[in-house]
Length: 387
Ligand code: PLP
Figure 1: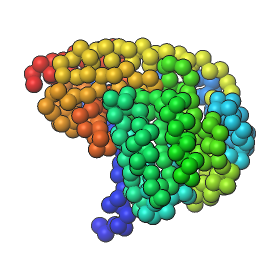
Figure 2: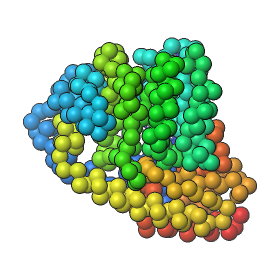
Figure 3: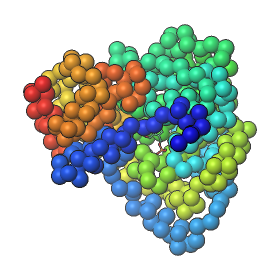
Figure 4: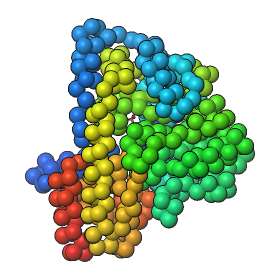
């Protein structure tokens, strides 16, 4: 088929490819333990489900405003104002089906062909994909293990040019679980202000953090006017399939992002937005329980991986991923991914699914029970003994 040229520049998320392969093996009768999926294994808290059910019964089944329902945008503005210590109103908020469209819309709205966008590598693969798709130049900033997978600000300074339009940061980070320090954020903010660039701050894991509180670059003076905060419900409230997220940004940009949404999907589903108000303003104890369980699993998987021959694993500070080094094994990351799946029945993702600098690493998601993680560690120990 003759496709438009731009399609050759569009990437994907290989998590879905590995999931499909794993399902195929399961259909053939093999037992597979899923450590590849980036979504909480918990159910959405019941108060949120009840609110959505009630909203459906009350006929929240029609189109709504492109930017989102005003009471939800107000609730989000209050939440962001409180947690980031900044002054924002509903005019700064655009609600989208998941946080992901914010990446797409914001880059479409801000970045011209030929502009440069600095993005974390290894990092969420959709950043690089969208940068390429819109004809901009992706400039990778390497997340180095020796720097606890945090970006190095001197390296950032060396990558900025007059063509740099946007810097993407992500903390807590996928796939490494790293968390940027206040000093990192201050230094990044200084670079952004000095060079007049925008920052897309992907804070989708802001509530899944194990030591201290989440820090946002938007809290720094001079940053609210050049920052887009991406956040949402998928991870915090185990709502991946609901498709509910948002961006918080300068009001002018919010208007443009809403216009893109009008052209693309009109609006986000109304009854999910009504439930989104309950999620933010209702009982938060389930979030605390989920994070406590993630912490238990993190400690378990890090200790278990470090006991395996040829694998070494840092302890991440946020999100629900570990990103151990497999450099001593003599296998490439993608060989490890395919052999561990077919020979040990454990689905994981090659570090290169997150960019070229992910070579030598593998991502394990610990959004699975301790029992299953223990089983997976046992299967991998056996596989590694046979290498
Ligand atoms: N940002 C990061 C870093 C992610 O890992 C994900 C999902 O995996 C998203 C954004 C998008 O989340 P959603 O569109 O489900 O809100």
